[in-house]
Image (tube, rainbow, N blue to C red):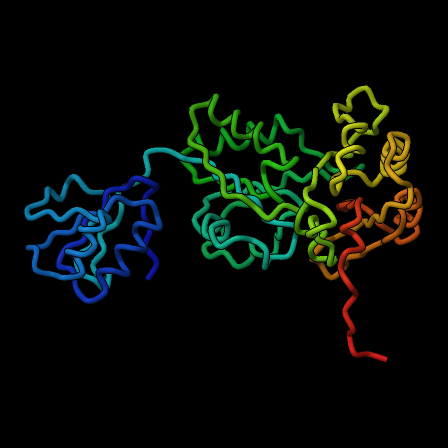
Length: 332
């Protein structure tokens, strides 16, 4: 039976410990609870837990001091937690789009949500599995289409949390890798709203891996850099030092760079990167529509266009692109 613990730091008392006390305690600790056990000191497992400083043994506890009291090891008589005194926001990175790459912690946060504020690139299919179903608010930013300003997204998160609701901000990839999660965090903090983060599998690593491209490879590449291609190198809004990127001798991963890829390639070549450097663009990573285009740096933009590479896509530039041998599929 799943334990519903009202947040990290909740005080939980386990009474009448039995044969499952170790499992119960570890489950509670995984949830961030502080655990006391009411016991006379004769239970060997409880003594071991106390010796490892996982629990505190109390003889005559004040039951009103606890958020949850478990009356038996089977959890059949669990008392309900106290009602929440306010809402909160959880920033959940959903990974590159394949529901299998959503973390267990992210899925649990969705199950506990009153409202989900989601992007179009999150694995939205998992929302249909939620019971009861939370309110779903779509705030996707579709290229050349529907667009919810970031400022409005911040307002929605704060408004919903201040209404006492458990809010999940659900987006693709990782919230803190070009996901504007930092802005959402600051908006919550400025408004006095509790906010936590559940990391997601970032597409900067996942997309190449799903295409069979390692970002590092022993004796070939010893590091990688991730840059935004949202604006071209000659755009005054660009803060990327493309000369430094070209001189790193590391794998270069470009996110949000489909439209600017030709100018990015030109800039890297102009700053000394070999135009024959292997490159690959991966679109819709992890989805049935995944597509991969490969070619030398100087031609990758054209090859990607011919292969119908469209956002969302990740481009990888470096010798690690050609580091792995192709698999023999056994087909003729």
